[in-house]
Image: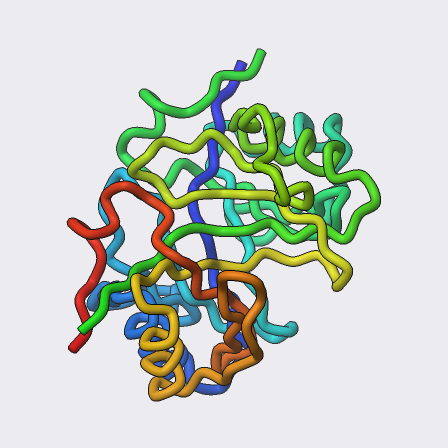
Length: 126
Length: 126
């Protein structure tokens, strides 16, 4: 048995200037950028969304710009296996998460639980 | 003066079987598909997200699959002009909304207010 749910969205930006990208999206969406990036997360800028809302981040990427979603799970391998049974394809692990491709073509990530209400509100899978 | 905010996300699927796409994403995210599509909206399936959460839909598209975001605004032209001043590019109007391209390359839509708490919680722009 494990739990998962939609965690949030990442705005992947193929850019040499991550702060400029974060400034555009911050102004466009009316969401403040959280102050300092976490150590080792220099490729991310996180928006100050409310705790009960999906997280939203801007990420500096090498591939073409896009938007992808994250699923948070308390057992990443079990969740990837569940998604595979639904028709998704494993792309591979990256640091603490796992990249998956939907049958409809979009790539997305299975990540560790991100939000405080995960245990109370995530879906439970047998 | 007008208002806008992040409204939600659309999972654009290049597929001949929209219901199969909706079934995959519904099972993957643990979100139910709302029962019947609205008249004239046969290319959309909407997930039963809570009223205070960003809306989430699956859309059948001709272009490559992707995910895009929507900004809801009470004055679409004023919002598109605001985004243009921030560096976005006008792509063009579609039905009741307007497609815009971010300086970082992602296309997104400016749509009419979608949720009941729009007036109370959207950002106000002079």
